[in-house]
Amino acid sequence: MARYELGAIYKINGENETVYYVRLLEHDSYGVFNPFEGKLCEDTFLKTPYRLYFSCNSFPIKRGIWEKVLPSPDKTDIERWKSPDLANYGNFNAVLFLEQHRIFHKGNPYECDKEKFIQFVKTGLIENIFNRHEIIPSFLGNYYEGWPNTYILEKRVILSGTPEHQRETIEALKEMGFDTKGLIK
Image (tube, rainbow, N blue to C red):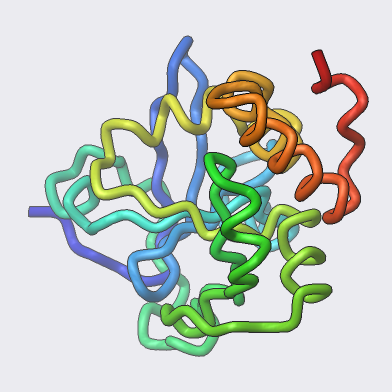
């Protein structure tokens, strides 16, 4: 069984032979790196910011499904591998999440002020929670490029449901400062 190692970097094979690199952070959270050039070394990853975050159980690491490509430079430094505060936001109900305006702080949800919540969502600091690792490659394939707009402004999600729900969603997105012109039928 593979070792669960805070700070280690793992490779996730995506769809169409796309490869994503993630660092294991605390609370079964992962930071997915931006694309980068150069060799796979700790120095390269230290210079590469995270594009998005997600949480998933440790099954794919412990079973070796996600290959460890670099060990942790210091697996005991919990402070270094903290996950940031992330917005509790899902594109399936923008209205509800905007009304609740909660963030995950140290792995637990807390209410924050609305402006701070909106800032988190707009910058892509969103906690994406998965109970099954099998759907993560598809999620990354759909949303990684253009994150967070590809997720927040996904037409098929926004334009599903009743016309009333669609209007409410578009109004919530406008309140958050997103350009919704291309969404209206």
